[in-house]
Amino acid sequence: MPIFARSRRTSRAASTIVLLLALLGGSLSTGAVSAHADDTDGISGTPSDGQGQDDRSRFSYQASPGQHLEDSYLVRNTGTTPQTMQVFATDAYNTEDGSYGLLDTDAAVTDAGNWVTFEGGQKKMSIPLDPGASQVVPFTVDVPADARPGDHAAGIVISVQSAEGQVLVDRRVATRVYVRVPGDLQPALTISSLEAHYNPSINPFDGSTTLTFTLKNAGNVALGANLVIGVNGLFGMTLGEVKRQELTEMLPGSTRTVTVDVTGVGQYAYLNPYVKLAAVIDADALNPGPLPATSRDTVTIAWPIWLLVLSAIALLVWLWLRWRRRSDAKNAAAWIAYTEEEARRKAEAERGAVPAAGGAHASSPATSSAAVPAASTTAGPPASPLHPEGRR
Image (cartoon, rainbow, N blue to C red; front, side, top):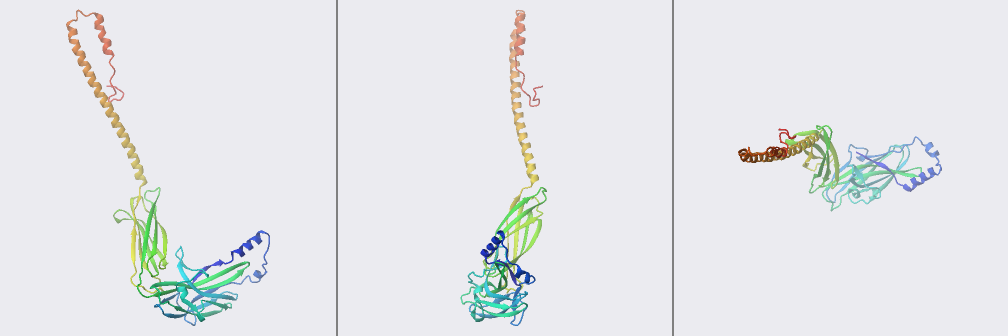
């Protein structure tokens, strides 16, 4: 399938000049634009059988080191103006979002893009085409004798540069090229890291878990994958939704970080987020043999809000009961000390009353009445543990 690259502004200085002219009140002539207001620029390129378009969406080869291959590319001018197209090959890579990217036009080419040449051994061809015209472009692929086993990715690019005012715009379209060198093929797609974070909700039976994981193509074969992402609880119980996601093709050596939110995960304390991966290949890709499958999981804690509230209440009740027990124990000790002291005082008073009774006729009223205030000076009892106010 052709890959349409974004238009590039190749002259930042020119665009700056246009902006300055506009700010200064200058005006650029629009007569040429008006005369061709309905003109369009369009390009396309597809694999060819040497006569016209065939049913391939990309070029896929299996070639041994030192092998020579021949094929054809069909170039079309689908616009309404004559265009001169530059056709060349360059190396491929994965962009940050996983897309199939190609090096810039002036970047050094060292892998499969360097193996492609056109008529006369040229690395680049210039092809002028009238509107609606097409041309079959033969090319060759020469695999180096020291090529390493595995997949080598590139792209055949059609580039058309056109001036829009003072700005030079580069329009590009490309078709993928894969060259597989036989040997020790190692399909290896791994989950190199996994992190999980729980996002609570006011509803204790709702919430979400965010999983962030990094995938790495550690082998030498281009692979995609089918992913299953979810969260388990105790005893393997499924919590929330289970997400299924297709991973676009990753070239050998590339890495990709993926973030997925699993919703509907309640606050059940123990959470076991997981990622399962089953490698796949594109329909047009060569089969490398058995494909890997792997999984990875981690553990995170989702403390229930209601449990935290109950725990706080329980702690407050425990602290109050502890204080109450200590207070009651202190009052009880004071009460016991008081009753013992009272009993001792009464016993001493009774022992002192016996000799006083024998000499009652000799006692004067003053002496008898003096005992009353002596007894009345005794301090009151401490607070009872049963009656903190001191009432008995």
